[in-house]
Image (cartoon, helix red, strand yellow):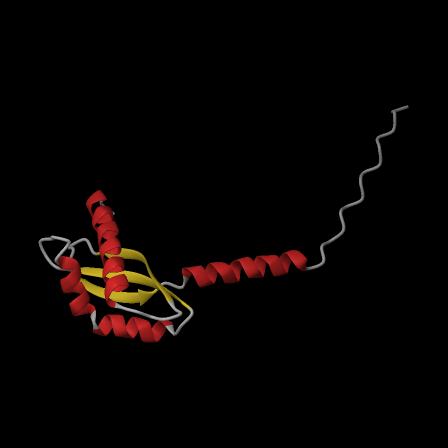
Length: 126
């Protein structure tokens, strides 16, 4: 990925977060923009979202329905040659990470094999 793409990804992530924070309200639900991946031609951008405490599919569906309005709000602050089409997606990496940590803790609690018997001290050679 080019350095320009990285900068645009971060800029879009920040601006999309600001628009969502200002225009949307989800009581008791934490909705965050984890990452934005813009294509090489800058025509499309995948927005990876994390939703804690609610129904992620319903929130993602709403954001995808409103993507045109969100795009126009973001593009008033981010000037690019073309306006990328935003596509919102669930980022469940945090949940997978928690599941993996829980699995590792469960494995750690399993009985372990006994240590091998220490080798007998070598005789003093006769």
